[in-house]
Image 1 (tube, one colour):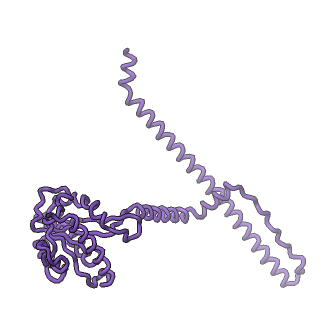
Image 2 (cartoon, rainbow, N blue to C red; image 1 turned 90 degrees about the vertical axis):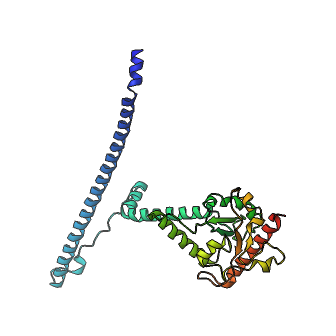
Image 3 (tube, rainbow, N blue to C red; image 1 turned 180 degrees about the vertical axis):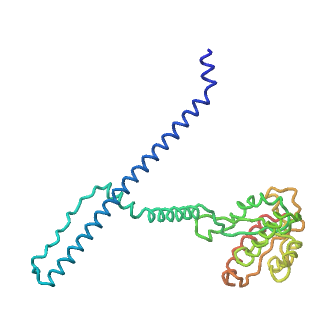
Length: 303
């Protein structure tokens, strides 16, 4: 029993012995690799030095024979002809070793590029790209983790516009106001504002969910959104800024019962020429977004 207890107690030293043995094997393998590389480099250096000496001797002999030929001491046919060097047959392993000796940096660089391109390709193929995207910009941090809840519903009204065999409509939440004044909050506020400006300049995002306060803060209350009264002329929930979201089951779909949706609008940007898109291209995005909004309101408007 004492021996067994001692064995258990000394478990850590045995573990260290195993780790030491593994580390020792690694060092031994590394030492052997360095030794082989050193011998290979030395062999190649000797071969290069022998070839250089042979070449210098041949040059000196040819120069001497040329001088004798000019002075008439020998005839041209007396000049010793160079013998063709015997071609050495290298083994496959020697050929591979020689190739990597001369081109190892090229191989490493190409391998890195191939791996990088492969990673980008796999990432691109795996990334789900939305056919239609929308932004939620009212100040409600509770939406941070709930935007995805609307995806299934909206995606059912979305055709495969990017031809990736998937129908995806996605909603993003971007805060428009930060009450904290610390450096981190200021940095996040600037980053979010930059993203908002980029989205408005791109012309990709047509559907906006927000309230008048957020729209005023961004300066987009006039001339930016389509007058929903023109699209839904007989609907009292349609206003100039957008369609009142409280008239739909939006907060039930996003599983956010405590949401205050009384002042929220679902709005559509007017198709215009932007910094990154022509008016014609944005018109197409607008028509796709309009079809989604119409279908959603038709099916999810409260009685």
